[in-house]
Image (cartoon, rainbow, N blue to C red; front, side):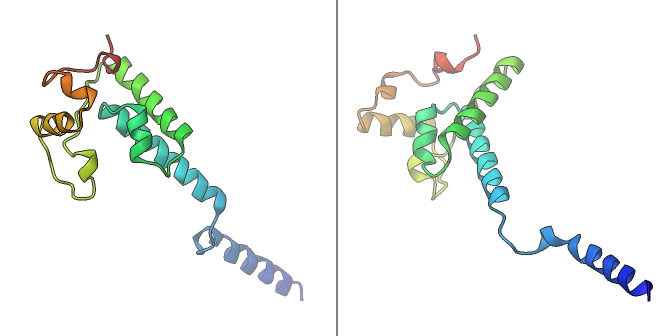
Length: 132
């Protein structure tokens, strides 16, 4: 008689060990995942030399605070390790097409849009993004 309750208890313990594998949505896990993704986006934007405002505009659904945190962490890391900016090879307007562009094409588009960045020379770096 005493074996039945212990068997039931063991069966319940084994059944509950896989609860995290069930397809039950966990709002805390989803929020943490979105936070981590936004931090990764911010870090990638900093590594690509994009300004925070551009990163916010390119990722309107992501948390601005998390983007900034990721951007700042990557900025500190790049400064400490003297890592240079890797310029993006995909135009922000054509991100869905994933069409690689060269620096001249980007400069030509900026001139067409009357952007202030068009006045810079090819290959120049933004002094705000360099570590020294």
